[in-house]
Image 1: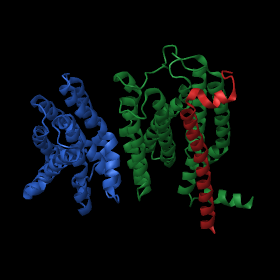
Image 2 (image 1 turned 120 degrees about the vertical axis):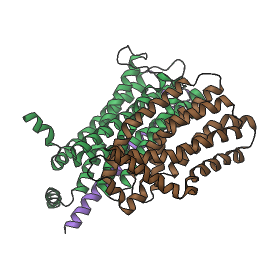
Image 3 (image 1 turned 180 degrees about the vertical axis):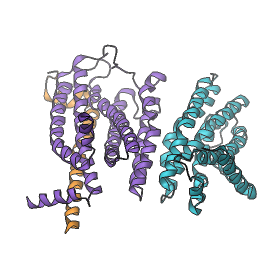
Image 4 (image 1 turned 45 degrees about the vertical axis):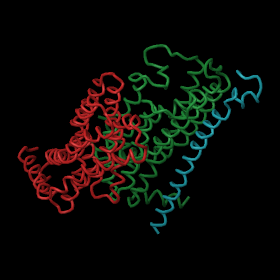
Length: 250
Length: 53
Length: 222
């Protein structure tokens, strides 16, 4: 019973706000540290690629960004389910906070991908399965944002956005498996859960370290945004008033 | 260390524009987003304290 | 969920269209005009037209569906009869089904009639037109179901047209890809079975997921 209580403790906006604002600086620090090590490993230590030359080094930001874009969408949809099931304001706030960051990572994945494609494939863009479905993911994020932020009635907008996010979840497996299902220009998976990775160790380490960095960064910025959304939403509540007053007295 | 000289590093085997262009975009966003969020947070706090008065 | 209510709503909506039959030709007219713009813009070279025909037909079908979304729920929402229909149910799925079926009968079926005509005008081969019609038969209900979801989510929003477009399009792109892909495959001499199976899978997926989502959306908008 105590563990259940602990889990729901942070569903209370005031407790979440306290936890989030305390952990955000640490998360940013973790992100920065991990990113610096990743850059050192990937840009300075790792060897060059036989076929692509040093243009391949875009991989250290392109792949983590693409992974984040997909995972964040799943997180968005997941919190939407929780919000819909429990009607908890915090769950909806988390979903809303995830969307801009997720959309940004999608844009970064597409952009760095284009800059990688031009020297290696000879083209900025191609309408193959993976690129197209990643573009559709961007549209899903934009649709979600338009739906939620464009609503006059905030509660209704959140619920509508949650439904939209859920229906769009089917796109994620399509992106992930697209390189397997269709013959595409985009390269196949080099990392799988079961087989040994088909890339050099230092390269893999650099990529995974950067993924950790992006994760920590995403947590930090999403927690920061969620706490702000909570603040705006609960502006009239007693804990917010007390908190703002105590800040002024300091 | 893979590189022999710093100028090799910046040139990235001729692909410098693409590689550093990508890294620059990501860096700019990863600096901009937290900054924008901090400003919005401050704005929200000041708005609440204004309303409380 | 009651079949009687489903039947009643379908009968009522079809009756209102039978009273004004000219209105029911609008979707077909839009579709035909939209398709006809392409040869005028792209140039009337036969080979080009034959190649772009499946894409043109599917894009026009999608746009035709999106532009008619406000006919699904909006009028009943405005005069309050939608709320009456949804009374007593947590998830008014029968209302959603009824409205979606009517939308498909009036829009999707119109496309099924118009598409072969456009196909001939674009120089498509007979077998390609057959596969196109089969793909449309599987795909247009999916467009109506996703469209119904979009309409329910944006009910009563300001500038809902643009929002509907933004919301529906990402969901309907797979239908577009598989539908047009089926015809392209046949034109290339391959079998369209994979694409048609995927369209069938999309149909089943949307049949299972969208009605309850639309019903929940209707509930939260009232």
